[in-house]
Image (cartoon, rainbow, N blue to C red; front, top):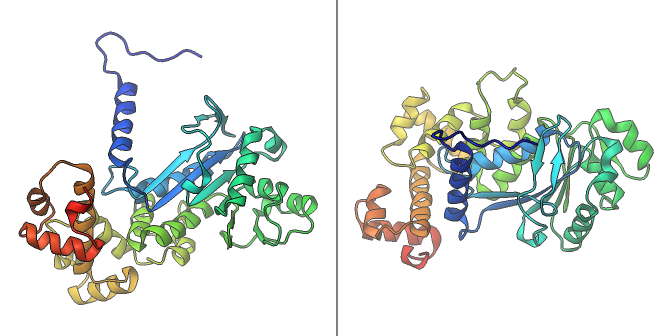
Length: 347
């Protein structure tokens, strides 16, 4: 394969992107993520399933659209130099070795075309068995459900299977009950999802559970291009049953507040932005997010403040002013109330 090299005098965009991603990883490396996911790819895996796992995590992971892996992390694991080829022909390189499975909240197995399920690296299956023994929840995506069944990891569990593969699953695993009518099934430490847009439903639910409804609302808003509930590109009516933030106006308000990191925005401004009265806005926000808009704005400022405390060399007074607090004492009091320790203990 011919490698791309920029001509003399042309900018090295690939090197710049590599450096940018390395910078983001370094900025986040010392902070424990709220949600961490390890991914195993089988040959001829569906690209949509991979992006369905990663893109909600990416949007939920950071403020605005910066894509730093702060609140969420993900790794595609495999042997050194290994690349899995998707069903569309795109090669995806693993970016990590087989990390200790207990470092993750979930391990995701994304299967490929049925005839190719036995062609993955044998260590993929070894890793799944070790993860299961360690009690780490395992997610079977698309035909990854078949992989879990082959490894006897679905004993006593009901599986969620795509209707297209229902007969194949019934013949191969007659003793395992399954459903073709659910977006996903969470059965203890086993989670199964048939693929497609259902992966977005599952990831939104996991983000809501581990990171909060505001992170889930941000992910849904960023992935949805319209308020029209009838469009199928991202079926909001199905996802809303799991994301717990059904009102698109509240999603937009969350993104507005979050994009400004809680600064220079008031509940009244957010209400006007989504064409609601302050009273309507406050009630809907409380119902969807579980706190008042004013409290959410403060919480957003404190999350940004914690990031600056842990990842910058700014003085506490500078951080207080940067995050909209009137003085360092007010900032320290609010920070301790939120995180249980003063900010200088996090540095």
